[in-house]
Image (tube, rainbow, N blue to C red):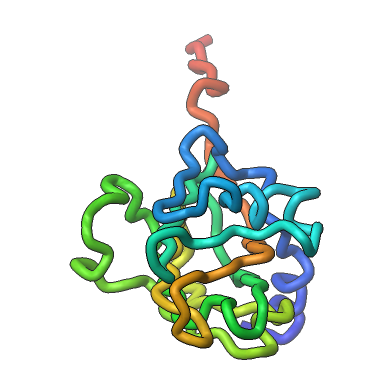
Length: 176
């Protein structure tokens, strides 16, 4: 890939929030008073006082379906220095049974978040593994300090939509 097309690709990345299918968004082990919308929804995720917190232990399992196929380029996961996420496993198109054991499947990508990542530095994903994504499952395995509660202040998914053909919009060509 030439440098020019690579930089154009960078410029075309967007926040994929507008393409999230909110009716199917799910988060296991979230605290009742500190739920996923605090970290994912526009307006809430910009409020430093709001966050997503784990409930029974430090793990969080989040499934985010999309309204159309996307290409995921990077992910931002902000959190506090101590209780912020550490090991994050990403699964593309694994949403069929969120309740099954995530350790039964190899992740599409794994990231160990640094202090810079927790402050907002994006994690670039293995782009080739996230080309035709209909849903993204995020498994937060542990946090920075090993405590029982993991806190996530903000989640931003960056990428592009995949141009697909709207089959309903096609019309039959009549012979003349």
